[in-house]
Length: 204
Image (spheres, rainbow, N blue to C red):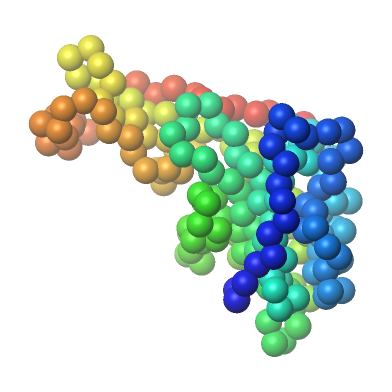
């Protein structure tokens, strides 16, 4: 997308009751974008039910008026990097809505890959149906258990790996600790010594 208009985002400590959901800071110029955002807001009860608040969301309008990115903070205890669930709506020349989604860092949508089963790829002419699918995708990911694999050596954790339970794809880069000489030792160790559930939010 060519460019984004980013509103000021309050900190969690300064958030107040009634904070608007998916607020771009100004009304969208495109009716399709406005309908998509309205569809998201009409379904926020599903996000609130899994512990998300409005202040944990952000909305960026494309400067050409034909798209929008929304993000939802992804709160996982002990995760070494901030991550968010990211959705992008774009209106191609055919006027269908194109919605993509991924889990990523502060480089928005940089982690999206069309062949990744954990990402969202959707085309539909109805922006409200796109919003419904987007909220379903968000809720699915917000309720997926996250586990941390640990490799131990000499009584210390020397490598950690976070991923969705049942998936081999890491959600962040592996974290290495200890001496560099242990890396080769760990490369041949195979399965982790321990797996810990770090996030398990039940879906209502």
